[in-house]
Image 1 (cartoon, rainbow, N blue to C red):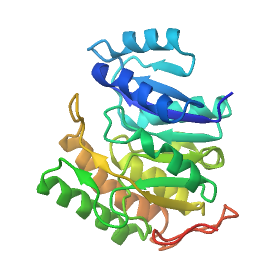
Image 2: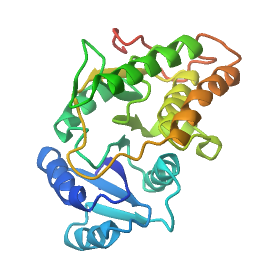
Image 3: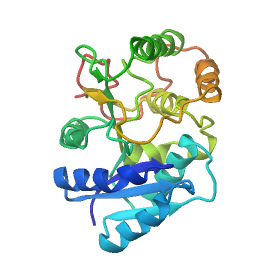
Length: 256
């Protein structure tokens, strides 16, 4: 059995799922993929079933309705834990996350419990974004760090690799966020439990097919979730405990 699983939520991603699976397997053949499809009206789910029939490394979870990014990932994480994967990735279907980075994540995971792909380590690595969206993203990262004290440069990023021990230690049923703030809440929960977090630089490329799922509800959820996380940690500026045998790091440092 492969030890790596990449969880990819999908909604209307028919044009992307085949190419992204091919790209992942081209870089990392000993990897499984779990597509979590929210009953896409464009036929994504049917195509994924055909892909599964052709390649056992492709797995599909069909959900009955569109219930959000966070719920999709939580369902995928539980699926991964039941099947004893050691490394569980989050990745988008739209090629904004480069499958070519997977080996770099695995190298970093040798000395970390959670590896974050950062757009803002050693400069800014974003392609095809307008200045307004870049400024919003950078401001959000600063906002999270100022309020929570969590020392990561890109807390809203969605390209990640968790070790199994992290997901096993988190009560996934109490994770509240469902939009992009899900990324902040999961990373903050991991950090607050004292696990070792590493960041590696990635280049983010805006989607080449499909459409963005961002809306005002998701934005407002992210705005208030940061304060809930700070309150949950009693406004401490450091983790409550040290769970990992590896040290909790600042972005510019390395876990050892």
